[in-house]
Figure (cartoon, rainbow, N blue to C red):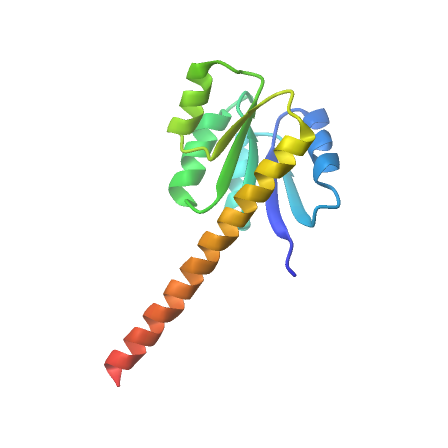
Length: 145
């Protein structure tokens, strides 16, 4: 079974390492970026099911990165991670089409549960897209006969 690919984007090494420890042994292929631009570049190279994305980073912030990712890769699930916990922060994240928003510090069990739920949703949507593509191809072949 192929590992689910997850991208972790956070400018703090200790946060990236903590997330790595939480996800270790969960059958995920993890990639890491220390800023938004590097995260966007990795998205051009790999297909990610889930992106864990810090909001407050130097350069391009996580909300802007999320907006760009969701425009280009709408099936990818994005969880925003932030120490910012006001209603307006949450709403800004959801306006950027984030799939979820988790405040730091987060409970590892809750984070894992959210990741599993979004991986399942991603896999279902991805599988449906493949199935629809195959069905469309079969219909097109039937028309040309």
